[in-house]
Every structure is written in structure tokens, then in C-alpha cells.
Image 1 (cartoon, one colour):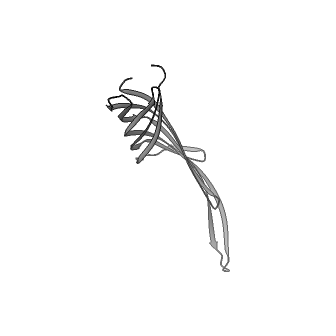
Image 2 (cartoon, helix red, strand yellow):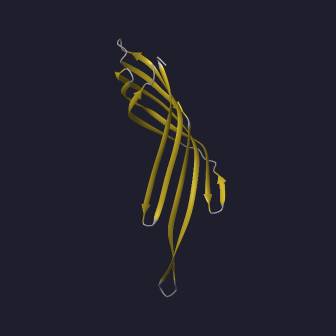
Image 3 (cartoon, one colour):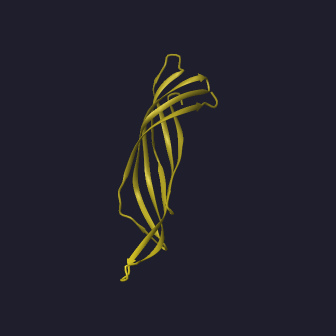
Length: 159
């Protein structure tokens, strides 16, 4: 539209840690409808400043393998040690929200370059843990906040 645009934000984040046979992987996928509302236009219409906002859905999963060593002291002064490995998973449903401020400059009628910065928050809606054959919901709360900055390109199709 002349003073607004609608979009769909997609995100995929993955963190993996491996240390001495133990490993943990956290993966998060998010999808969020996004609105951009223009607050200001230049007289020639080539530059604009806008407010960016979104709310959506995210799913995170955690996979971990941990190796532990248990040692027992024997009466003769020696130790007997056994290694054990345990696998576990957890998943969470999150609600991501974002509010930012940005601007664009149209280099031609159908193409603009811009930047934006703002704050993003993630709020925990539900969590589950899986250990072996059992799965259970976890009564937990949580949130996270991030500051972000992004470069963006805008393509306008049609008139």
C-alpha cells in the first residue's frame, strides 16, 4: 500500500556444543506476520521512515547427550570407574514479538535499500521434556530479549 506493507518473517537458529563426548544442540524455527507502517515520506517520495512490528509462533528443541563417570573406592585403595551415557530432549513453544524503527531509500521506482533496528522478545508458552520412553509437560516460565539490526531490500511488483 502507499503507507504500509505486510510481510512474513521466517527465522531459523541453531547452536551446537560438543565437548569431551558430550553434545548439546538447540534449534529454533519461527514464523511471524510483519507489518511496516510509514511514519514519514520525503517530498520526492524516495525516502521514508517506518515503524515495524510483528507477533508470531516459534518452536525450539534441545537434544543432549551427556557422559558421566562414577568411581567407587575399593577397600584395597584402588578405584573402579564406570561410564554411563544419557540422552535427553526438550521442546518449547514460544511467542516472538518484535518492535522496530527503520527507513528505506528508493533507488528506482521498484527497488529500495534500507535498514532497521529494534527489540525482539520471546515468551515461553509451553515446554516438554523427553527422557527415554516418557514425555512430560514442564510447569515453567521464561522469556528472552534481544536487540537487533538488519539491512533490508524492498522489491515492489506492479504499480
